Image (cartoon, rainbow, N blue to C red; front, side, top):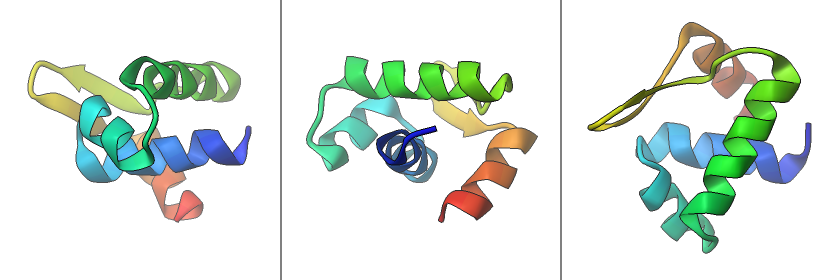
Amino acid sequence: MELYQLRSFVAVAEAGHLTRAADRLHISQPAVSAQIKALEEELEVELFQRRSSGMALTAAGKRLLGEAQ
């Protein structure tokens, strides 16, 4: 787990959207998406529920958010 992955995770959790988080972090949306996917694979948990309206935290995502902040 890398610090940049946690920063991206927190940004997506707060913004609720990959694109808004990417804009906030000044990186591309595919880069943020890849970082979230890599973090989920490393932790072996789903951190977000992907919806057409954005990204919602799962229970595991909520626990990680508390620790990451």
